[in-house]
Length: 366
Image 1 (spheres, rainbow, N blue to C red):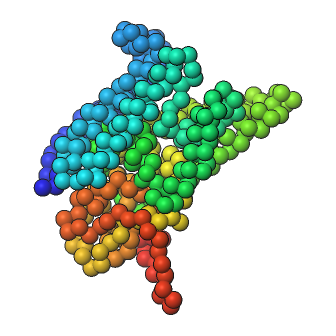
Image 2: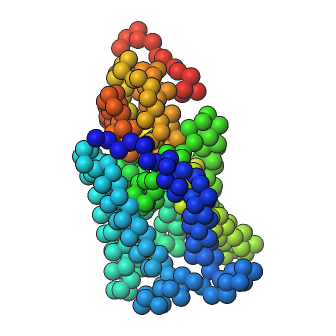
Image 3: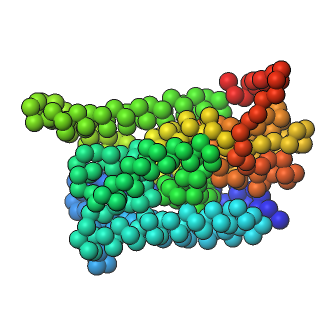
């Protein structure tokens, strides 16, 4: 039996009740305390996370945060597998892989590197999501093999993989942001807005952030080349770098991206802000990955759209007999998993147009 929605809207944490709003506020405040530290105006004079880290014998609050993040994915992954993993090998393997990647590459290896006196490197994150990995100051301090891994992964391997397999290989199988959304954020996936207005906001927002990431990286490189001769530009470049890290990396990805899980779904950051998702999504639009639809089989139940965490109205595509090929799709496979008639299937294959075959365009793709 597939896990349906019978209990979803009865649970006060999952139905945008007062309890959900309180939980959202607590998550947002926690991220504010993590990134901002002491907040004297609110009566908080100490770095709460640093104090908590010291209390459990950890040197850095970021180590504590990484531990809590990883534990949240483990617990959330167990919850997801109990709910969806019994009758879906794809969901079972995907969830176990993304949790394992976080444990090994997102937490353990960086921690081991610091123990041995090296600069930590998060092997599951790449530019432009981890924008500083393409900054000159980071590049010159990295060992050659790690540098090759990071640069070739960001600029060569990942775009190629996105072309052949879609962005799902990263967003649903590797990325810690997507991993947290698919595990700890599972109870709120149904809150993603499927309206055309939300789609327009999404397109404007995510590509704007991607553009800002490109410009910020370019400014940092120009500053590295000529900053010593132009101190005013150097100050400007450092301000741009700091503001990007604070507004995009801390406020958008953390405070808003995770804080709004209980109210707007678990993929707020992935859908509206992640520059990596924007880059891979652009490649995906011209690549092989798509969700294919069995013609004239959809009964319009809406399970697929309800469970789409990226706000895609999958039902509209299925009822129009049109394959889903949206840049936003992360290939989580939940739409196919929840379809009672097996109408949807995730596939990686090129489209071969026959001579004289018309190209159909539907309103849902405009």
